Length: 498
Image (tube, rainbow, N blue to C red):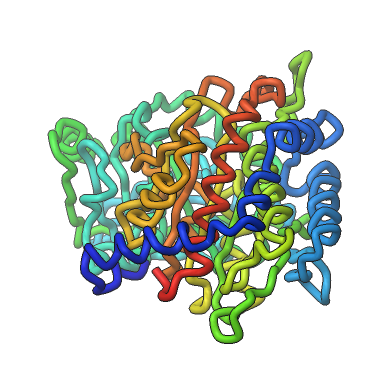
């Protein structure tokens, strides 16, 4: 991520204040006003309809939704930004099946006097990562105590090692994503969760290991791609090597995050799987050329994810419609694209409208886009990402990234210049959830692009079949998207990049 530019604080506020106010011509105001409650309601009912079958990646429902977005981009007059002159940027997927009987984790001491072997058939759960093919051996670094990604060990300690995270399983949902990403971006060989879950629970889950999974075929290019993310129980290790229990007890009892190096031990991992077939998944990309001969070679990317989690079998209502997650963001993206293409609403910088897939699987689509952008990534000056913007507070939007760059002061100024929106941006209200790492803006931040992530936060319908269109506050969303529109005007017309 780029550091804050060396302008004075006063200069930042002057820049932020002047851009949105200067941009409010009659035509631009009309464009903003075209983002309406009626349009939001109409589009959310379509995107989150049962006919889309939950928009899983990959699925026919996702393809139907992507075709609709592409048709809308064409109708608005956006230039295609996908493959071969189309709006679709496709990335490869594979259907894979783990060969558990040929997969294992082995710990061994340097003197070869102690071995611990954990087979995938009974003792190991694979949460992420790809086939290693041949066995991979690396050193170990143990981490325990209350998880805190901000206190993660230095890259020099992590690089090339398997990280053994000694963890209370109840803390995993809150911290796992951030901890794993920290490890992978530091160059870890993999992450092992040595959990306190019962060995029988692990064994039952391991027995499901033969199920078919879908993964990115080029996963090595994504954060946390090839390196394995595995779980085994502390009890399973201690059963073969009782001395390990003392180390686990020490780390479980730690009151602050604690790091232990085991220079006399290594781990060897083999994950064997077979590829059953291939598929492709779509991102939808439209581009609006900027009006300034020089600045049009810089780009502001608006993003949202089109996919959701598909179908949950065995329920009377089995379709996860994903109205808020992230049908609301997709609708916001369409509203923005339509508004910016209205008369004299385009900005000096070019704009990219990016509707990605695979977000729910691990930020697949945005990772691919960041690695294969249709324009040089260093010419992307900002990413404004929308994910779950249709629920909760009627007058507030959480905005992750406000403290990272000059975009934060600029957004504050934009909101103050548009009091009619009654929409106040606030910095991350739940930093412990580590949402910087949990939506598509993250892949832009990794590439050094300043980001803002607009969200209305979680609710009880998150990833449930009850995340339905009727619960979207379309009036609130329209005002929120208008705020993003004015922010886009500010960034798109600013004299300098953030």
